[in-house]
Image (tube, rainbow, N blue to C red; front, top):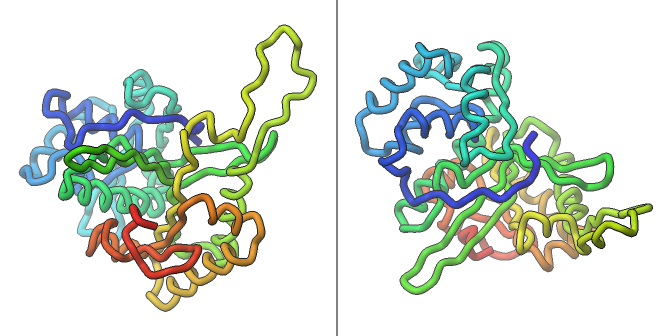
Amino acid sequence: MTPAFETTPAARKPSPVEPLPHQILAVLGQHRMATTNQLHQLLRPGAAHQTISAPLNKLRREGLVDYTVLPQSNRSRAWYLTSDGARLTRDFPALRGRPPYPISSGTAASLKTPHTLTVLRSHLTFVTDARRRGDEHGHLDWTPEVAHPLSDSERIIADAVMHYTLVSDDERTKLRAFIEVDRTTMGSERLATKLIDYARLWTYEPQHINRPRSRQPAATGPVWLRWYPVFPRVLFVLTGASRYVLGNRINDLQAMTAEHPLVATLARQVLMGAAILEDLEEHGPTSDIWVPLAGGKPRPWTQL
């Protein structure tokens, strides 16, 4: 899993100066896996389908990428880096600090496919909305599987960390969010307990015992200040069940927020919300579809 680190905000659209094969390798290094269509939407929206498929097939002939065929998908392909591809990309500036994570076989890829591609589906809704609005959020401004310590032996792994810049005529506002993508594969209570972990991260300060006097004093304050100027928002994206079931899961997140003392304290300082993935895809993330976990009417994620 990736240690927490700050990524450099990408341009509003992928630069045409950087070779497309390089961009494809960077996306697969960052997101671990993507379908042909997802790569098309991320890197060359509006271009012919062949624009993406041709370099993908060339990279496969060179042994840098491979694919697994998705079940019940009219033979759609999900692409990933081979060991050679992972070695090549580990020195890319955009991926510095992100350890290589090659997938050893099509079988291994198929086991990771459902969750990985759903997380990327969520990312695509923000990318598409940012392009429409003129905001800054590109294909490398979303880092999956980011780990943060909760103690000397425990850690929380966010499904993704998002960096997003709102752009207006006279102002640029940088926003960050921890993203949790729920496919209804775990119990509702287990999902809600993730809020406790984020509350623990918000308060966790490492203890420096027997620190040599010759060293500089340790930085004080919560550990998250190593990576973020303010604590990121916490956003839950839900899918994989009926609206009734997903609504109940959102209600359970709200109940945890109200009833757990540490989470309730966090909610007074940190913006948190939940939305249904299909609503993100249909209406866009800046529509009134996010339910504030602290209570209130649905609103855009930027106004939680």
